[in-house]
Length: 204
Length: 353
Ligand SMILES: [Zn+2]
Image (cartoon, rainbow over all chains, first blue to last red; front, side, top):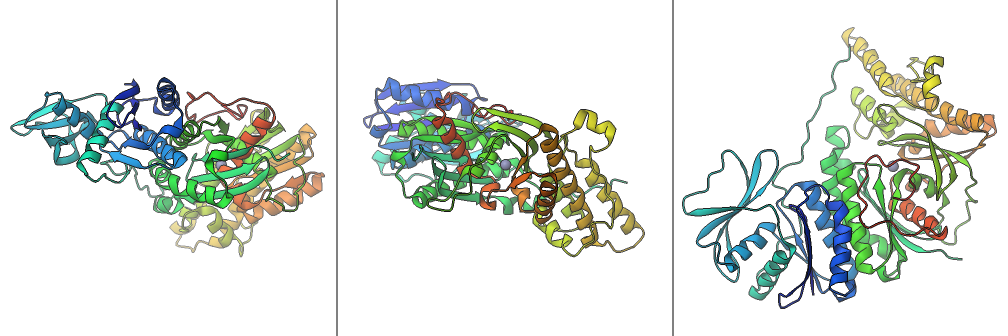
């Protein structure tokens, strides 16, 4: 039984069986309340699945890209569940979850890009080649100015507002089935922390 | 009675703290600090602190569990600081604590960081000599890089009043800024303390913020350090402009004296005014030798008994958070709502969110 958590866009929590069946899912597109809703969503998903944490066998964390403050909430929560239950933590790039469902749904073919908002008039873009069991990542996640973004020829862009945690769990299952390695459970920040080195100013 | 077994997570500023207590017994206190990463910026950079919390979370949690020699499944509650503090930093702890509590099917307690600093005083090592009960009510002076607050604590679980706080910089921040002015590294507290050791505290009479009669009317127990910082800057600039050497030891000692003077004078005044003959110090500035000595001298002169928790519990830590949650549990209070958020300005009157 997998618990998947993604807070790279809104907040999404899902419990998915090893065969891919979605047992419970709770999602919100709100991009400002991750720390709040993560609690009720986890509680409700467990309640809807009529189980407690002891039955979880794996935790899947969406590692972004996404706005940092919210993104960290989900990764922190996923790490805590993994520690609490002594179970493995699987990291999945959030764009991969969307890419897989686009390919499985027959929506994306050939080369395509998954795009999410990165704030500050930028978008985060990952380019994939449509294939199964897993889409192939052609260009890793990177930032582009929204106004300047133009997909390369033959690349169909798909901009999404939400990353469903069930899709994240499916991507993890696909990686497991394919024997593919998982990335480190580190956030894909794509941006250095904002700091300005100030020099002491004169006061007189 | 042994009390509930509680794990506390603290991520309000630049220390990732995980502590485990059983009632008032301290079983583990593990702290990872991102202080070094902030050094070249001369102060805590919120985004750097938040990133560091996420990185340190797992290892501090594992180390605390190992140090305490417990199993997570035995926990009676998971506690976390939900405020006040840096909001992005707080959210890392809040997200982790909620998930930990739910995954373990154990109650979740979100508590106030400042009250935690007071709660640090009730902790003792298992089997260690008892430090004596924390007598209440007490005045508490909490001073660190992030806060400067004067509290009246009647009960650790449900009656804490804010008497005053800084209206601009925290005292610890003033130490950092003055250290930079004097060319001393970050963090400024220990550096100023060291430099001041050979200096004359009466060399320069720096201003004592909010101590004039007209200021005392509205700000009897409030603090202000920005004027002091500017006065030090002006003093140093004048010397440099005149091509004179800056007597770092004297300036550091005079600055430190001004800070220690205001902090302790106001704290003792609160004890006297309110008829509460007890003062507790907390927060990282307790490490400052002059603040401690002056507080001890003035407390003795005023007939006030002074308590200072061990330094390892004065700086931000998770054990103090667990301690407050344990007190709340023993007083019969239920868990916090799982939907609470991080509150960067959580008032001190809210012991548990
Ligand atoms: Zn503190």
